Image (tube, rainbow, N blue to C red; front, side):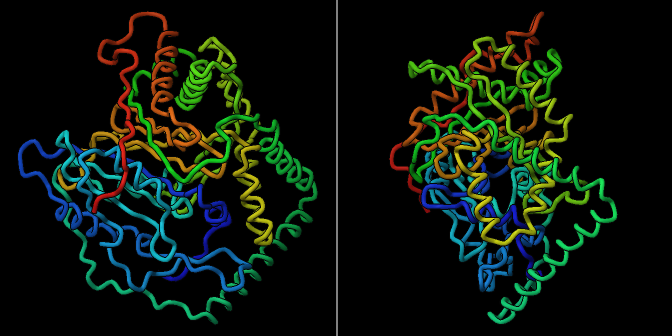
Length: 480
């Protein structure tokens, strides 16, 4: 592939990475081996994944920094790409232990920014897979699409693509990188000049553009996120706590109260944070969540990189009534959508791409600040039909939403078949009881379920507190 410049948003996730903030998205998934037929070994799974890499050329590219630091880095082909450096076998019998170890380590920047770890002999007989890719490479939805490249819609795997003739494009010379950087910067400035010309032809658009930018900034900055122990200085260690619920429950709450599934997720998180504070004998406080919003169009389908913007929502954890919490969140998200908040934020992010690199980096750090949001809550649609990897059916997949500096918790939800899988990604030093918080989320969903009048469908009923959770294990070290 020819070199391609990272967008300003993609590059921002590189800019905010630090020793205690590893900016990779990821997932921890389990697969059921074929009921009839051999149990695949690591070599079979390795060959299956390696045979699909031609479907996503970004898998074989690395980043090349701009020579003068005036532009975002470039994606260039990795001249010595080796799948064995990215697809690893683990002898772990416990997937949670492997997940915590893998997700606590940053990705190396001198090679393509992704890894898969496969535990082909879990204690329960399933196959485990922990995957991660840098946020500069994919957003949550693109990560799901990326994972789907490895999956099939039936037990019979499609044949591997003949890719033996692939050769990396020559690595650009330093002078070529310098010239390309100068040309790209000039082109960006010419693009910036087009905006005043367009505005000059339509002078009434000038106040509207300024208003949209101001509203986007106000929505991000105001109100300032309250002080919280979720935003204390933390560690690079990570723990993934999980919960799993029938999707019919969330949909029933949505239909009964005229909200969205995303509203139900946010209300459940607010309820969980309330219970968490009460267990710690603290006064529950409202917190501010950053909510990624997908802005991919049909033309972006299957494309990597980030096509998201952000909405900021207050989580009313101080409110004791679960229905009132849900209604407050539903009203807030509805009003933001109706007033075009997400479109304003998307326009502001696009305008930022024309700013000088120091301004872009400063904006990235500002957006990742704990004064902007206490935590990230993300709803990531997943496959609703059965999916298979080398004949093994996908059972569940728990999402990983990265933590920027001084953030101890993120919450992701993805749908796998008829279930919603929740991943609570936490810094165990700052938030050592994230497994209990997953139980709080489960209980908050029970509270919302109880607001529905009439009998509950028996097929969806499940005992309270029965969330499936990854539990911490000692010495979480990847085993090759």
